[in-house]
Length: 234
Image (cartoon, rainbow, N blue to C red; front, top):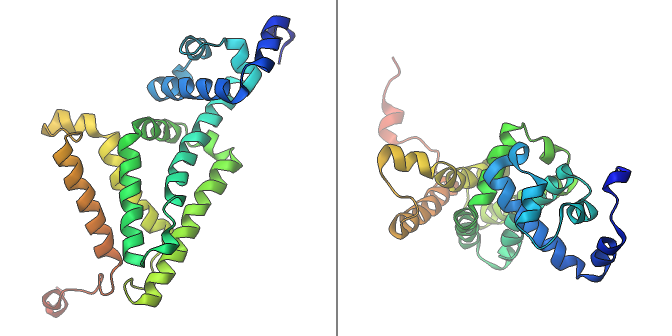
């Protein structure tokens, strides 16, 4: 950090005497709001400081730089999704019920955290530079693929899931709809006039994605319809 950014003595004492986790939490919450509204380029550390009871220099004290703060925000939001999944204890549920609960929790988390959806969209615009540079994000997200792999294996052994399913593909299927209905809700409202935040719409979509995923994984799901199989090719 440049010498000009060094903390004054009084501010340094404040950094040590205030509850560090509380201060860090306040900064993270403010940064989530700032970056989800304006992205990394538009987000300003001055504005993040204005949202909190701390200062710009205190933010640098805790996070080092704007880029490091942004990376911490992404790690926090991805971690929240993974924590919600791990809290399910899927291994204690029958395979089909476990998969349904995973879909429901994914749906609920996206619906409750539009800031997560916005920041992931921004990160994709920037070609995942911060995600690619974060071992923590990659490690946490690898865990969900491991959970799905184990769940699929249990379902195949129980005869309720078909073999040969790719866990990443299934993860994408689940996440895609849950993400899209939040990321595109404003354009869908403007074009089709449907409010995706209406309770009846949320409930219907939640049921729909659960049913779609369970139908996709069940045995025989990809077998052709008998009439289609009998139709000669031209």
